[in-house]
Image (cartoon, rainbow over all chains, first blue to last red; front, side):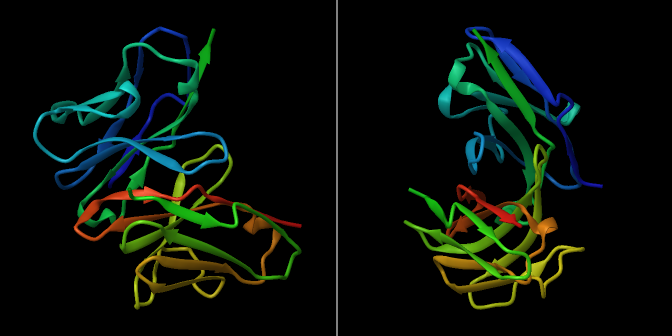
Length: 113
Length: 116
């Protein structure tokens, strides 16, 4: 079955500290992987995506993610978190055409001063 | 580029009435549009997929007669919640893929529906 697991419901980090949000997937074909961010009451903004090629993907706002096929993971990282990064983060897996994109349950990031 | 808008952003209606939500791709032609529903503190649940000029494809468990989707042009899709009830209260989000780049969905800002 196709699925996306985000093991952490919420994470709290100090401003300036590094961040890693975990994402594991189960997908029958070669996956297209995405990370989105959602601020309260807002839609989703694409942070980055992986389709093929270099397994370390750079995104907007200083985020990066690494695709590890052997671990079926696509973890999101940021070296130094800013207070404005506090939001809900969703990992998603899909295929070409956007059809049947499956979203993880999300990880809520809290940033403390 | 790749901006998707939704209107209204927030709507409150009485039980039994119908509500229409618009999803527009402002600066591109959308090959396909998707409608999602998001419950509080939960992930997105795909409701239906629509292509311009054809009938929407609904996900299992989604009532097509209750959630009417019309995709009349390459830049506009509408979701009408008919005979709304309090349990239909939710956050509805649309997304669109653009012609020539169908791998990425661009999301609208969402519509908060509250049924009294």
